[in-house]
Image (cartoon, rainbow, N blue to C red; front, side, top):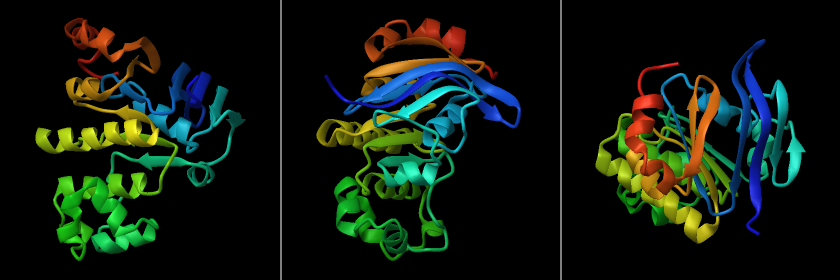
Length: 231
């Protein structure tokens, strides 16, 4: 059976004394891409931050690599977690090459994922386009050879063609390297094309699960019922 990389069991989490997500149950296996979708405010980012160790569950348990854990994010990253936040994970005042060096990722490895980075190695990240910055963010994360990647809104503010390229790289990493992925994505239809399974969130709870084919088969109903408006 394929290894389970991370699992949330009855997790409630939030900020201060306020629970934002409640009774979350999900799991991610090696080589599997999970799409976590829902309207703005549904609790998707809070769920990712809890899986990453940035937030501690108020109730329930997170199991990472087979063991229950309450370790912080930096420790989970040392143990095989990669995290790409919705705010691009680059240092704007440093060059592309310096960003990679800081992450201990070789330019050669980064360019295997995104050949377009090769010609802009000397450019400051702050002068790169949004698509180039996100390619750099993802290259920094994947280049460290994570077991599990958590990615929050890779596509935010980017053209559909760039989004398609980023998502294909994520799918290839899962297929060829066995990386497990949890992907929060606003471009739902594009996300479904690369995902294996889907969790739909609304108002802090998972309200629907299924394979990507199952959810795609009822996408109009899902969009009308769960993906419009905020929560």
